[in-house]
Image: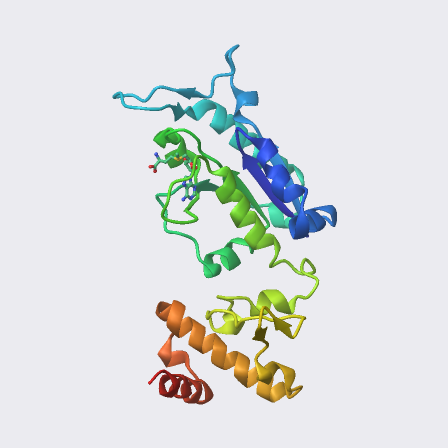
Length: 258
Ligand code: SAM
């Protein structure tokens, strides 16, 4: 079933970046997902098509007005409900992109991609009138503890991360399974990768990968998964979840470091 992603944005043309290139473009062409952008300016009722105003209480910048966003959200939800597909009987969730939420993780992306449709609300300027957020938003998501100029890049990050998990999107589905953070990797980091030539810049490929011994390669890769995770993201290592074999490999890594 085609995933339906509607986006409320002042800059619909930014979404060409995912609609026109790479994996997301191919999946869009194959109707794995569908994208509809709504410009709040088209829902403004005054002749200047005003979508922002000065903040009450003073201060710098402008705030996005509630009315045009409210009407744009209604249109997006209506579009998805008009599809009249069995799984669209529930309203799609409205997702507000904001730096003030908890940064999303791989687990969050895997949960989000289960939704048949979503409506993304992209803020600009100082943000959105709080009353609109309270009245219409189901979910708030950040892509990291830093501030972007707008929610568009954040929405594209989420869409890209979700679409590549959908069946049939990646040429080699194992890639998504074996990527960093995936449950099949126990949430750990991916191992390093090498390709031809065998010697580049004086550096050779690890001999284990050239052996043709599949069990040996798998063992070497698992060791590198553990070593990298331990070194770069020790917070991801869940010692309770480690197998006997993993503990043995970790022991070898510790011995090597001594
Ligand atoms: N005044 C806001 C604050 O400090 O929380 C920041 C406004 S920011 C300049 C404009 C818009 O960019 C926000 O309304 C939000 O939609 C989006 N945005 C900025 N950083 C983000 C992040 N880390 N994750 C998701 N969206 C973000």
